[in-house]
Amino acid sequence: MYEYLKGLVTAVNPYYVVLEVQGVGYQLQVANPYRYTESNDEIVQIYVYQAVRDTDITLFGFYDLDEKQIFQKLISVSGIGPKSGLAILANSDHSGLIQAIMNDDISYLTKFPGVGKKTAQQIVLDLKNKLGDLEQTEKLTGQTVIDLGVPGASPELTDALEALTALGYSAREVKSITKILTDFSAQTTDQYLREGLRLLMKK
Image 1 (cartoon, one colour):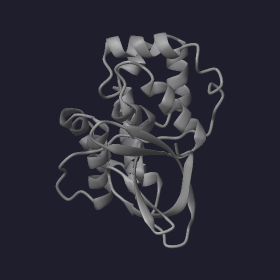
Image 2 (tube, helix red, strand yellow; image 1 turned 135 degrees about the vertical axis):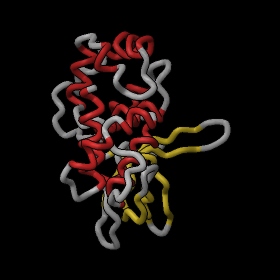
Image 3 (tube, rainbow, N blue to C red; image 1 turned 120 degrees about the horizontal axis):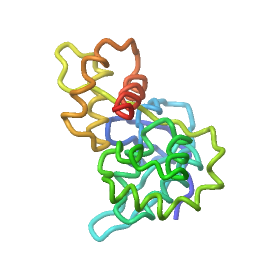
Image 4 (cartoon, rainbow, N blue to C red; image 1 turned 90 degrees about the vertical axis):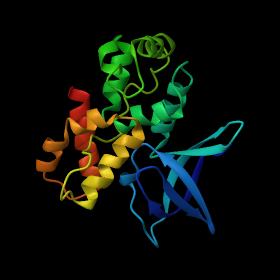
C-alpha cells in the first residue's frame, strides 16, 4: 500500500493529474486537479490511496494526510464509493463537513452529488464518533462550482465546468450557476472551481 508519492506534476485535466516519479507517470484521481500546476522542476508530495477492484486498480491522490484520512473514513460508509468521496472532498469547507456529521445535519450532507437522505443518515451513523481526531483541522481546502457550455467562456472556466461534471454534479445543477460564474472575476480554473462549489453548497 502506498502512503505518498513525490515527483513532478506533468499533466492536469478535469479528471486526474499525472505525477511522474523516477520516469514513471502515475495517474491520480483527485478532488480538485487544479490545485496542482504542471512543472518541470517543482517536486510535490501527494498522498495516495490505492483501490483494487476486479476490473482495475485506481490511485486516488490527496493534498495532505488529513484529506486522505477523511476520504478513507467516507468510503468506509455503505453507499459512499471513491467518486462520491472525492466529490465531497472537493468542497473547501472540510471543517463544515465534520461539523455537519457531528451535529446530524442531514440537509447539509445531501447537497453533495450522489448523497441522498438515506446515505447522509448512514454517514452520520457510521462517522459521528470517529472524527474527533480531525475536528480541529484547518489545513484542508477544496473547491467550488462551475459553468457548462457558455459561449465565449475562457478555457479556465470551461475546464472548471468539466471538472464539476466529473465530480458528479448534474448538467442542470451546473447550468444553474452558469451566469454567476460567467460574471465572476477569476483568472484560474481553481478559482472558478472553488467559487462554483461554494455556490452549489448554498443551494
